Each structure stands twice: as structure tokens, then as C-alpha cells.
Image (tube, rainbow, N blue to C red; front, side, top):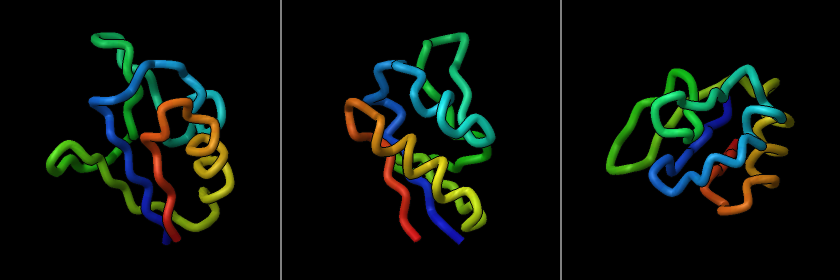
Length: 74
């Protein structure tokens, strides 16, 4: 399992995460920020456990994020 961590409040809505890892990310129509699907929020950090097969795409999304608010840990 991997852990994906997202600081949604700092999102600028660039859409890279959605383009690179569509299975886990969507853009909110309300505020234009990305949403980590199925994640739980705690103190401003949204966290999701995902299968290791999802590592590559989410790592690419984390690397592409211009504000560095996505972390992927294995």
C-alpha cells in the first residue's frame, strides 16, 4: 500500500494531478481546486491509502505539482 497526502487548501487548480492520475483526482466545480477521491481530512491534510500499482501515476502527479502539495509515500 501507498499513502497519498494532499494539502488541498494550498491548491492553485493547475489540473496536473487530474491529467496524470485521473483514477484518484478530480477538479472541484465549486472552488476549482483538486480533490483526492476517497481521502479523509485531518488538520488540513487529505490522506488516502491506495494499492502500490497506483504509485507511478500519483508520483508523477506529485512531481508535476507546481506548489508541491502532494506527497506519495510507500
